[in-house]
Length: 91
Image (cartoon, rainbow, N blue to C red):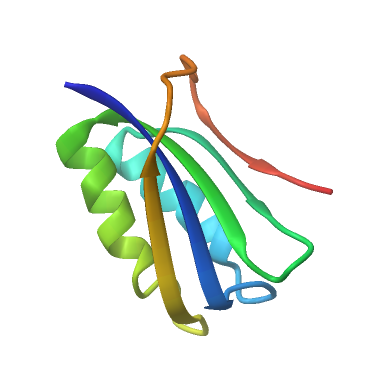
C-alpha cells in the first residue's frame, strides 16, 4: 500500500549531513519525497512509497548519520502527493 508520511526530526540534526544522508537512504530504499532543514533547527521529511520501505526510512531517522543526535521523531500520515524522486530542499 502506498503511503505518505510527514516526519519531523529534532535534536542535533542540522550541520551533520542529515538531509544528504536521508536522501541516500531514501534512494537506496526506493522512497520518493523531500527533506529540508527548518528555521527551528528540526528537519522535516516527506516520504512516499510502499509502507514497508517508508517505515524502514523512518526507522533510520531515529539515529540518522554518525554525527546526529536525534531526540525525537514525530510521524504523521499525510495525503499522497505523487513525488517522482527524492530531493533535498535548500533555503
